[in-house]
Image (cartoon, rainbow, N blue to C red; front, side, top):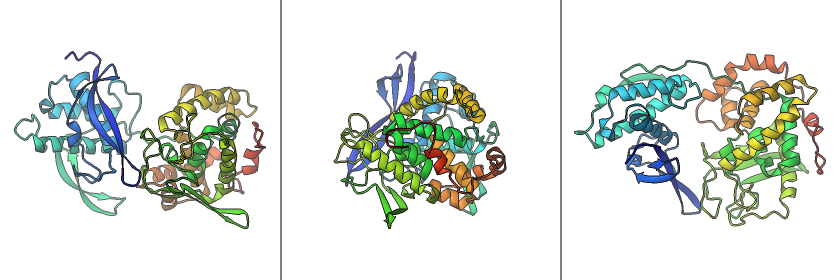
Length: 427
């Protein structure tokens, strides 16, 4: 088989079990020209779960582990070393790959990586190779003792000493602190949300869930309607006509489409609430969106909150493409603003791509300025570990300079509502 235009890729297969629980299984395949599958491999057998077990729970699909392993495979087979079989992989190949990954110099790389990101990749690669070596002890050119050593380290997250596997060789990384360069000024946020309100109501709730509940874009796609046949995905608590609480069900990843296509992963299964300062604006967004949905079809057997023109739940990939279209329309609006900050951000968007994650980032910046501590940020963001929260808190001083001061009313809702763009609903 010619290696021209051949590469390893991830193939996903979905099925539904039990009470409409969606299960996605990943496999590692060989593709030609990024499309045609030309061969299947059994490399998925060596992808460990987060619990470091091969026989992991049914809802665990390997997540980033497949991504990192496929990067290693392409590097070793096609991009640099051109090995013929996985048993030929050696310590030099692994060392070079991890260093190129850490320094952001892999073929096609356009990003730098922090120490935390590099350490996650190291762990995934060591776990994969260890499982492969154990299954092929007499054939591998690499031995576990040449790959890693066990070391006692203190875990700040678990607050105790634990044993970790660390490479026997040094791995370099760019060592740059994570920059919060995507900070969105409130003036830009107002224009963006009004643009979505006026012309792109189909993704209004996806934006609202990210901006006002701090949810990840893929998690936003998992939210069900209040009247979903699978159970209410979002519940509203009203007292004397005033909204007091909004609860979102992210406790289980369910199938939301008749074609079984996954909409996106829930990183941390949980019950999520809308942040108190944003209850009113979120509730109004929901009412406007549901008015928009009158007459629009949706798959009632699943009851996804946000759907495409065919009535099927919007997937993360679909959301990303729609968001990019919104940004294309946003740039000229920003460039013709009287506000210098908005104009500058418009120029920035001409050079740098942003994703729907910007809403979660805006939410996190706001909560940091509101005075939330690590525990508060982790709770409202639905984090598993404190690293992200600490990043925001470490940048708090710079954020306070950038934003000058927090409005005494916490969120200037009236200013946003009276924004430059309006629609027929009065927003």
